[in-house]
Image (cartoon, rainbow, N blue to C red):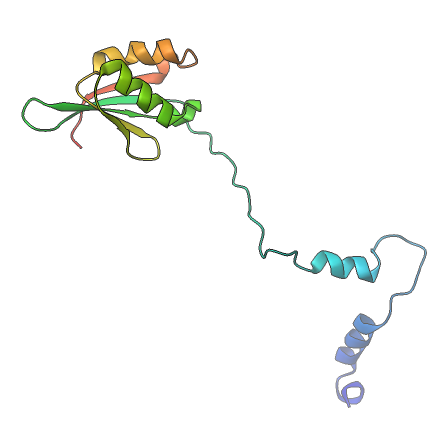
Length: 142
């Protein structure tokens, strides 16, 4: 019926289902290999690796007011230099004898106003950070 009523569709179907003949050219892989490539591997859809975004290497330091005459110092951008934030947080807490915590994915909060000292401490501890890449924003509201 298909051949009689729709000959062009029948021709496409019969060509697609016909067994492949060996023509001597190695253009197309054998049928078994082609099906194996199409088949999904175990574990579902694979994870696509994202490219690392080239973020400018900049460390920003800001002084944030808390209550009355108290301040906290915010250090952002240390991740761009591949510095471990937990290690840096412990170092700052020990160096300045105060509380420090990692709050966001790339932010360290140090209790107290250490904006003057922290630039020298960062350059001393991590020599790959140069003076041009440290930016002091001064007093900033949260």
